[in-house]
Image (tube, rainbow, N blue to C red; front, side, top):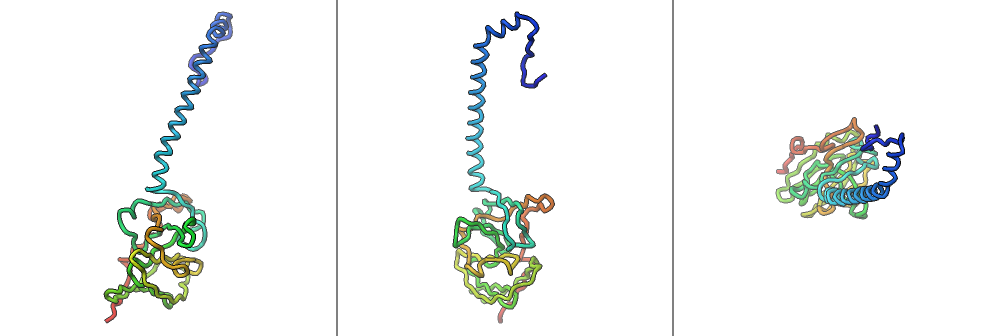
Length: 223
């Protein structure tokens, strides 16, 4: 029996044929009503979906696909990420976080990088090392960047961040366009942090690439 059939049709006698014929108008009306009801339900479902999905993507989380080599080997082209957009509404970004942000020179584009320098700090790059300086105490912290598996670049740069700026760099330093080239990222340009690497399935991870500097950074205080 067809699962959509409520009652099987019997065409073996004229009585049934006559009954079907005389009820034809009613059946057509019922069909119209069902079709109208179905369209109405689809419309309501679509509206409900929009009400749920749009705010979710705007304020809570949304998907992004990685493109480019600037974060290799931490991230590769084609990886599918879910980006957490709500955490940074409650707390400030941390050093080591993988963030997605609007490119300062073209806000229509989104970049993915790692936070290296925090607001108010001085970031110093020299001889392949990254040093963070607290301008209030002149305390220097040389970062132990264990996630860098490729050669570090020999950059020489010193920059002081304002109260709403972050210094970001790609893990693949030699192939990354980042704060070394176009400057810091303002706080309001940060969309969120990488929450889940969903695809490919064999690379699934929660907070992919995140790194806790507080446990690894080495302090060298000037006396």
